Length: 187
Image 1 (cartoon, rainbow, N blue to C red):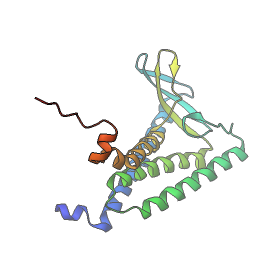
Image 2: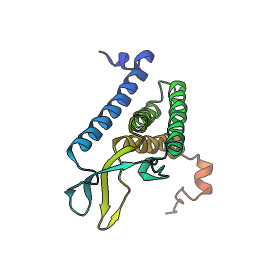
Image 3: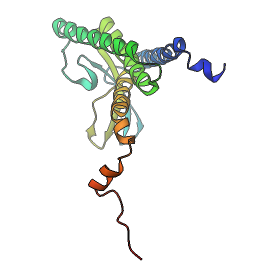
């Protein structure tokens, strides 16, 4: 396959959707492994003082925020919000040009992660979280592969949004106004 084939407009987005499917598959496989290998609230220390594998059920959104407590109304609300976010991200993905690979990458990570957590919420009314990062007794809320995909995707989306401003070289007038031009020294 030549370099030109990679940029075939019909294939570029399909490749990014394959990445979304990979994030979804890794997320679902890792959650199944945790659910079948650990007791609820079980823990395996991987890097003492920094990283453990745990098995917790999260009825809230990412990182345990806004727990629904297993109540049907809360679960339905979070599921509806998940579907709404999925629709918005899907439409944004569809509208994004094939010439925006960083944005497509970020959106595909968000899509894969959003679908991963939505599958859990639909099938089990809660999401399995198992990655526990901490320093000493200070723990970040447990999370999973789907949360990681969404988070990395949003960070890349921000990088895409601010990237042009960061890469743009100031004009000579702007540079001199901001003291970015070195003063000439006389000999």
